Length: 210
Length: 142
Ligand SMILES: Nc1nc2c(ncn2[C@@H]2O[C@H](COP(=O)(O)OP(=O)(O)O)[C@@H](O)[C@H]2O)c(=O)[nH]1
Ligand SMILES: [Mg+2]
Image 1 (cartoon, chains in turn cyan, yellow):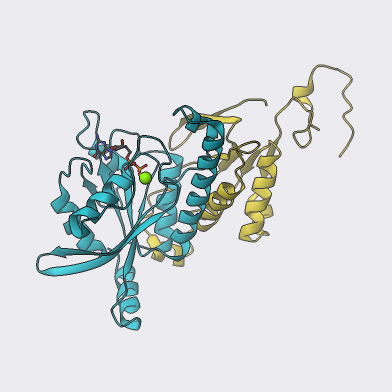
Image 2 (cartoon, rainbow over the protein chains, first blue to last red):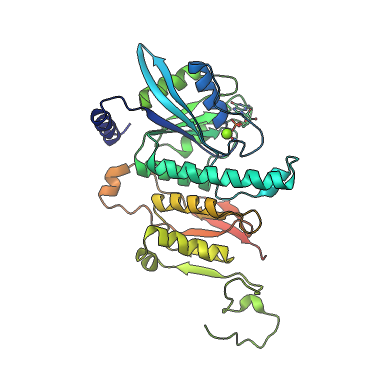
């Protein structure tokens, strides 16, 4: 974590009496496993899920948050609000939804909700988020325009960010490819679906966002 | 704008006067200089780009946008998507060089936003190839 980030963080805590809940946004492209991860974190520490996971892109159309998730690490505890966001894109075509056997009206409504959710998530990133977990599917090419732009936006706000290389259980997964794409940030491999490497995941969350 | 002075009736593609999408068969490209964009506030930049793209044009920015402006562009694009007429934008820029400088770099006045940016309607532009030094895109007619 940068010197300034650390300083900004201590100042924020100082002026708010140290009781600030840090809002951690889970960002990343659609289908990377953001909701699966949010649910796992939430279930591991509170017992409840955040929202439905789905192979249909944009299932998470509105951001959902789980507040007061207390993560205990090495005798220390960090309390965060986990915000699961819709995958960021620059385009949404309702025809995509119709490929998933949806009626046109339903597809149009879903795509409209998805766009509102993305707009909201972008807005929050500028105003309301204290840390970012950026989730990527390790089997996909990380070198996309949206990823580059989003990481740039996050960096420009100087908020702490961890890159999560998800779906390491897949045969085509390459964590190295992700680490090389964003060498300036720490990359944590995991499988949110199978719960692999969650110890390191929680260690890093406590270290970066605690 | 001058009237189309072409007397060849088929060569609309090379017609330099191809206006706002409209009935034209060609693709209009607006190349906006860094100087021109510099004079605009963030939301004016976003508006200029989206007005052009929604008219069906390809907008090329000599200097690109700042991260903050990019996030506003995404936000406004999302709020304007309409399933029946606007499916969003395609945007391509060269990757930012390793931004190790962070806030210090920015305080030192390093301009890491100076990068060519191409923006077009998502239903008309398709990126064929992109790497650190080359962006290759296919633009289709409506
Ligand atoms: N193989 C594998 N699949 C995963 C993993 N995490 C999520 N998925 C699957 O990826 C799909 C998208 O997950 P979801 O959490 O809804 O993605 P989101 O769009 O980023 O919220 C679902 O079918 C998940 O079951 C993982 O670690 N490994
Ligand atoms: Mg989701």
